Length: 338
Ligand code: ACO
Image (cartoon, rainbow, N blue to C red):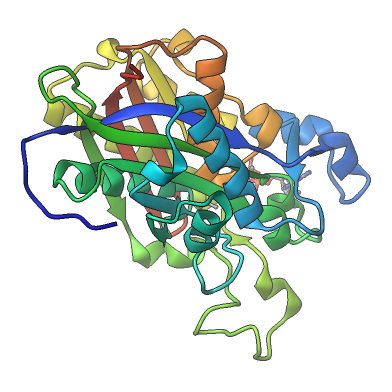
């Protein structure tokens, strides 16, 4: 892409969504045969009933390519019109090249700039914030943001507290430049990161500190999580982030038509919903069928909310997430598909 800053003022517009999940469904009953757990424990503690896992040949970019093609097919936008492909992921195919570059090649987005964003489960909202900024600065007209994850390769099947939580999948959204007089688009973002909490959720091996070529205990190559601390952080930060954003925008929670939170744990979402005082019928969840798909979870839920008729033109949509870093993000957007 070539982008020259400036031009007429404009707003980034959220046009539509798409998704792709691998075929293999892994139920709680399947996990009961692999680890010391039970369907009853998983459902009552997390709300998850099943998740998807990739086949042995698939990697994150394969899912991202499927989701990117679905977004373009549903929105009717030509791949050659994509200026930027932003790819939030914490489970890339490689340290480098980026999943974004592989995905752009895979879909034929030959004009697009492409880069990954690493903000773990907050990544989709970070990616959308970046895309919005590029459009509103006049650097790009059409931005594809696709969150994609293959967490099944990074969970320790000996660790029952983490292996039951995560799933694989990809989903994304298309952003274009809208008429500022007609579209209200993205109203605001609240993003943050607290690296002092890094050890609460990490995959220690595979980077420059503990390279894959070094000596390490086998479990260090998998997700290590202090579940109770992450749980406490998540319940606090989702509420705080949303309140900060809505106060800044002077918008009441009663004006929000749909809340889509990061799909990590039903108890975390229920806690946030109760504290924020939003009616349950204005919340969309699908984690019982996918588990925690990290950067893919929010667009995967948004995609299904559209298919289920839960999201209409003009609706005010609140997104909120948290993840490794520890990071957090919230966003308020007016959905204007046409
Ligand atoms: N099956 C059966 N029993 C289990 C399982 C399991 N899968 N996992 C843990 N247990 C047991 C524990 O061993 C413990 O037993 P004990 O009392 O005999 O020691 C008991 O259940 C309770 O364990 P807790 O850890 O206290 O369970 P809790 O209710 O806190 O739930 C959970 C654990 C689900 C992990 C919760 O803490 C949680 O959801 N945390 C947040 C995780 C999260 O959202 N991560 C997001 C990651 S986002 C990203 O960026 C990747």
